[in-house]
Image (tube, rainbow, N blue to C red; front, top):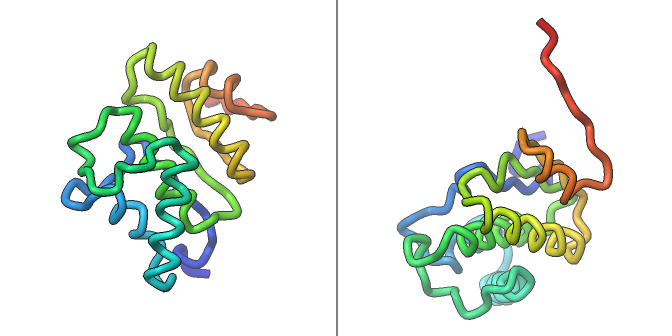
Length: 140
C-alpha cells in the first residue's frame, strides 16, 4: 500500500511546516481530494481543537514555537488518521514551554481519540503522554 493511503498522521521533530503557506494552507495540504467546503470546515475544526482558531491567515514565522507545534498537530489530525506518529515533537522547545505543550498535546490527543506512538529520548515526555511505555536499548 502506498504511504499516502495508510491513514497515518505524522508530527515531525522540526514540525515541517511550509514557510510560504498560511496556517490554513499548511493544515489543508493533507486534505487533497476533500471538497473545498469540507476542507475549510475541517481546518476550522482542528484549529479550534488545538486552541488557535483565528490563526488561519498567519504564516509559520509569525507564530511562537508552541503555536507552530499546534499547527503541526492540527495538520496531522486533519485527515482523521487511525494512528499518529510523533517523532521527538518537543525537542525544539525550551524547558518551561516543553512542559506546558506536553500537557496540552496529551489533552489534544485524548480529545481526538487517536492512537499515538511517541518516539522520544526524554523519559518525562514518555511518562507524561504514554499509557504504555516500551524502552529500547542498544546492545553492544
